[in-house]
Image 1 (cartoon, rainbow, N blue to C red):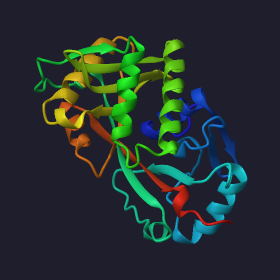
Image 2: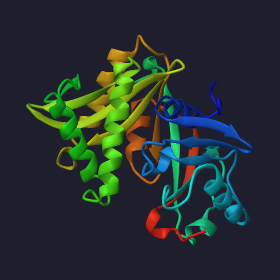
Image 3: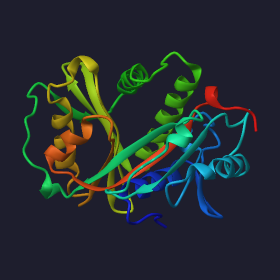
Image 4: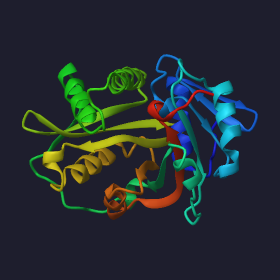
Amino acid sequence: MRHFPDNLGLATDLLLHAETGIVESRNDYIVVRTPDAPDYFFGNMLVLTRQPAGSDLKRLEHDFAHLVGKPPSIAHRTFTWPESAESVVTLDAFVEQGYDATVCRVLAAHPDDIRPVATNALVEVRPFAVQQDWDDWSRMQLADMPNPADITSQRFMAHQQTAYRTLIDRDLGNWWGAFIGDEQVGSLGLFFLDGIARFQSVITAPQHRKRNVCRTLMGEVIRRAARRSDQFVIVADEAYHAGEIYEAMGFQRKGRVASLCQEPHNITAC
């Protein structure tokens, strides 16, 4: 069953979580849990129907502890919900209590909507084939995190690799790399869920950014996957420029997803 049919970003997030963890409707929430990865902040969360008010904070934290977990087993708090394209997102009351607030745009396109864009002729696009591809992917993803040497980050990446490779083994999608010679310079995941093709974790190595690596990779993957789905979805943080790249390729805005995450170092005991 697809939750939030009017928000393709959140809907496909939950479809992915259902394949790799547990998704349950409980009271006024959808509860997402990934029991084998308690450090996965966005794999252990409460999904709300609407933007919370500051006055909801204590209730939400109480319900999170009851439905998802609390320290020491779950050492973070995460909440997410759908937003319309026009809504005003005001989360200062939560930020003042140590939460990080994120608003992402949901973008969708039919394969025929994709416009020709500048590409990089040096880039070869292919699915991951050997362990070295995954090792290079892990290093690139970790290097893009605030604390790559932190054990929490490393455990998260190990879990993600296992989860994604399980999805690939079940023929639900693939992980694709952009290579210049033998060097992996970018990658992305694309998974097919309830007829929708959903991109995951698009990344370009810092030294190769602004060289059309992302455009080349995405355009080629869409071309090869066009027969499998007529709707491609990607979610992009509004604070970064990547969304503009996708819109230039022909993706159109289809609402937003907002979230609050209080990481372990900002949590006080209940």
